[in-house]
Amino acid sequence: MYKIDLNCDLGESFGAYSLGMDEDILRFVTSANIACGFHAGDPSVMQKTVKLALKNNVQIGAHPGLPDLAGFGRRNMNITPQEAHDMVIYQIGALAGFVKAEGTRMQHVKPHGALYNMAAKDSKLAIAIAEAVYKVDSELILFGLAGSELVRAGAKIGLQTANEVFSDRTYQADGTLTPRTEPDALIHDKKQAVGQVVRMIKEGKVLSRQQVDVPVKADTVCIHGDGAAALAFAQQIKETLELSGIEIAAFRS
Image (cartoon, rainbow, N blue to C red; front, side, top):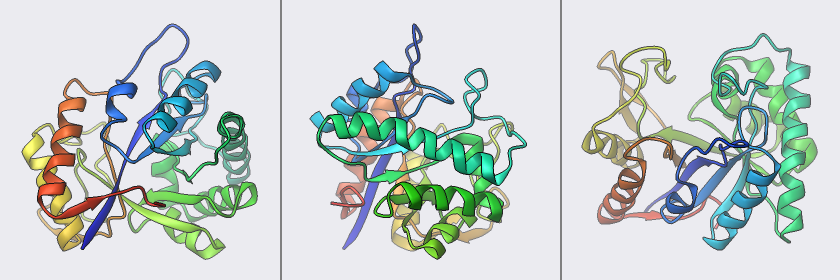
């Protein structure tokens, strides 16, 4: 029996700016990565998103990013491992307050954007992030790019880890994601995206842009909720996975 968690980055509105379709997308996912105020989100949005996740029986995770609201946390910054460690603790703590206020606890932590991609390759950065998560709560699950330095660092320090794969992103031959700055980084064809996910779950492989099969382990699939067709795609991927004999459940169910 195949089993997969579906996660989505949520709570990315800020002040007067509204982004994504959080309330609708929560009907189709099992884990929510909630922005913690650095790359997106604010206190009111965090509180609202936590409550929406609980209402939909969706597991909650912190989504810490770089302090770059203007760039949505997608621009690399030359931070030290200590700075990464400190900003991750700060952001987990911020969301943990709202989660505790609702009488529950977080399931996981998933770094955002550039921080996520930097930690996928940089072992020192990955270790600093893993240590931060472990110090706050050793029971938290660390989500990271499948086969990445971040996943290895989490396992090494004693955290439970989840290998994450992407439905709407293309891959490179080394298993990393194609940078968003390249024109073929995103998959816009829903059928192609769903097919990629099913293959990663059932065969443990993904076809890279170099036309080479790359081995991957899929514990959780990221669905982005801010595209024009995000809602329709979320519904389609959930239905297709279920029809393919794949059980959809939160990583910690």
